[in-house]
Length: 324
Image (tube, rainbow, N blue to C red; front, side):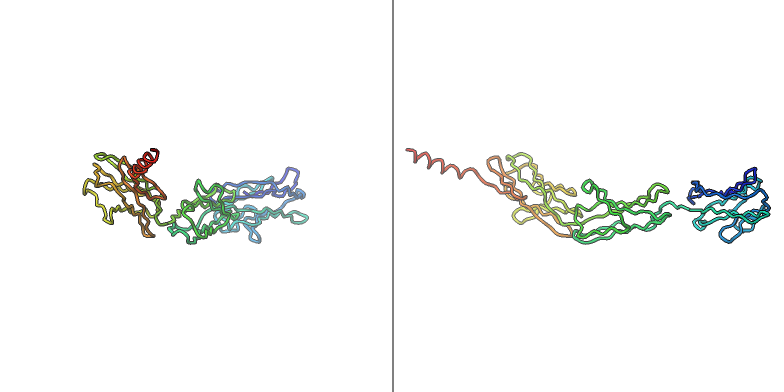
């Protein structure tokens, strides 16, 4: 609303208003500018202008814009209203007053604010470990919004990039996850959108531990592998692939874990087994031992070996003979 105020004594008060409007809410925030001017009480004509275009002269509407309406034209107030404010309405508005002596003008500047809006953002991306990526987030608004990127990850606390473009060189598996783009300009709440980054990498066997099981009992060998995409598992013994359902053996696979289950362990089952984990980026393997109660399993970096205790007996006998 743009106003021209006149006091009862004929003092003209300049429209001391700075209007800041949000087109989406049409909710004006009025701030004082403390600029005033005075004239005598012999006012003969009044008009509102936008730059050089006359909007209203007295009660007569000169513009064709239906959004501009006259609210009041009295001895104390002359005001118009612009409905459904647009960014193109921004600019200077002048109240012109004609008196017997000379004309007087006063000006108010209309500033239109626009809430932030993200108009372009990168799609979800899948990339191999070690490659470079670039994420884009373009936002509009008035004033121009600040764009920030943040990695949503417990391991990435404090990681923030203040730019429309986020460049990551040699991406690692730890840098996978959601990346949040936020656009803010203090007109409204920040606008937030996310991009999911999937980092592919070959399998890595993190756990492959041998186990000791007596004959006749149930035994399980486990092979755990981290990989994206998830690894496919295969089990081998003596270079022969083990097939589920044969010889009382079951293979149970999950996305990151494979189990080789023996329902009734026999002497024939003891020995070294090889777990192979593979995906489209590569493969890896680990040797795992199923042993009996009288054996010791030594595990080193995912491989295990079977070592018997019988070799200790000759040493004990020799030690006793030397004593005598």
